[in-house]
Image (cartoon, rainbow, N blue to C red; front, side, top):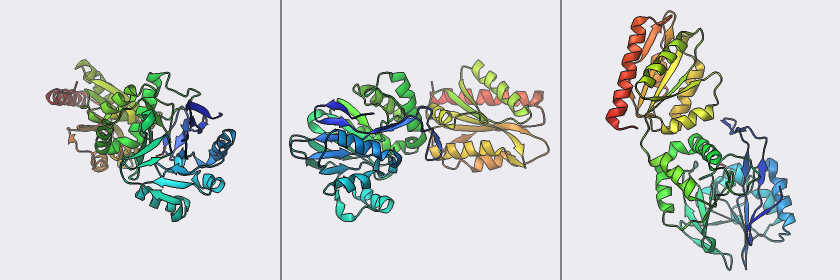
Length: 394
Ligand code: FEO
C-alpha cells in the first residue's frame, strides 16, 4: 500500500498486515490489522505520528521515500508497545536529527524496550503544545489504554485526533475511512474487550476529557479512519458507561455429554424467562468472541466436567481470562458434572478474585443429570432472572 493523503499535508504512511492472526501471542485477529503511522508536514516542521510493527518497517520507510521526505523533526510516540514504536530506531537511523516526543513514562519505557538514547527525547506535559508552523499539535494524556504511558495528539487546526490504540480496530482494509460501520463496530469492540475493558474506569475519564475537543476526524493506529467520529465515540461510551444487559454468557466444556445436557437445559430455562444467553463451547470457540460477549453481560455461568479432581483446564483458562478482563458482570454460577468427586467449584471460584460478583448456588450432578438436578437448574434460572430484574438490567 502506498502513502494516502488524508488532507493536504497530512498523510497515512502505515502498513496493512492482512495475514496476522494473533496479537501478543494471545488475541485472535480474524480480520488482520494495520499499523497506522501518520505524517504531518507543517510550514516549518514535519512530524511523524507513531511508526509500525518492526516486521513491516520497510513499508513505512518506503512510504516516506515515496513522499520524498528529506527531514523529520519530531516522531510522536503515543505508546511504547512495539507495534507502534518498534520502527522508531529505523526512522531515527535515517533522520538522526529527529526528536521523539512522548510522555516521561513512555520515554523510560522506550529506553528499556528499544535502547533509544535519552538525548533523543523531548518529553511533554499533559495538554502541552508544539508548533509545526501553521499546524499545532496538542498532547493529551490518556493513560491506561491499555498501558500506563499512553497519550493522544490533537491537531488543532484540523480538529483531528490521533489516539493510537484508543478507538482502534484490528481490521485490514484498503478503505482509508470507515465504510462498513457494523464491521468496524465489531472489530473495535473486540479490541476494546481484549485490552481496554480491564481499565474501563480510566477509559471513562479519558472519554470525559476528550469531550472538551471539537473532533471531525479520529485517526487511530489500527483499522480505518473515522470521518464520522460520532459513531465510534457513541459505541465506546456505551461500552464503558452502560449498565450490564439482561444477558448470560455461558462458556462450557463437556466430555461425555452430561455437562452439555445441563447447559442445554439451563439455556432453555433462561430463554423461556426472557434472558438472552450467549453459549460458547470452549473447545471450538474464538476466545475474542467470548471477550466481546463479556462487555455487555450481567451474568456468567461456567459449565465444566470434573477431570483429575478439578475443573476442565480449558474452563479454568476461560475463568483466568475473564478474571483478567474484569468485565462488569454482577453474578457468577457454575454447573457441571462429576464421576466420583473433586473440587471443580472451589477451584473455579478461586480463579476469579478480581470479579466483584455474587456467586449464585452452583449445580453439580453425579454422572447424568436427573430430575432433581434439572429442578436445581430451574431454580438457578429463576434466581438469575430475578437478580437481573431487581438490578434493572434490560
Ligand atoms: Fe497497538 Fe498497545 O499496541
